[in-house]
Image 1 (cartoon, rainbow, N blue to C red):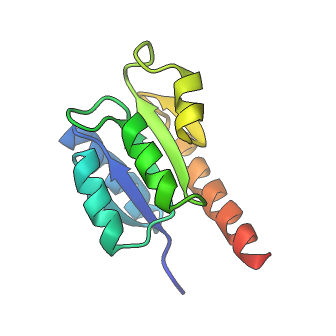
Image 2: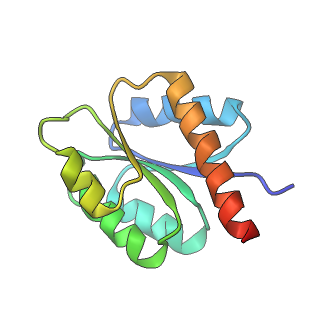
Length: 128
């Protein structure tokens, strides 16, 4: 069985480690990046369909990263995660191509349900 892969992109190492643990314990293969640029390099080497991106990062922010990913991976499921909701409007996230938007702190059960639903959707698309 192919293990479902998740990409976590956040410049806060503690958040990345926590999310890696949550998803790994749930049986997912987890990759992480500390910046948008690092995430794009990782995606050149590894096919990952479900992603959780921090919006407020130095350099390339989450909005720019989502737009860049969408160019090459239009079917990926990409979720925005931010502690700075006032800086990033929901409309900006939708326009960039995010599938959903979460404000930190996010409940663990919400993250896990989101990932499960994303993989179910991807699998339905593959069957068609």
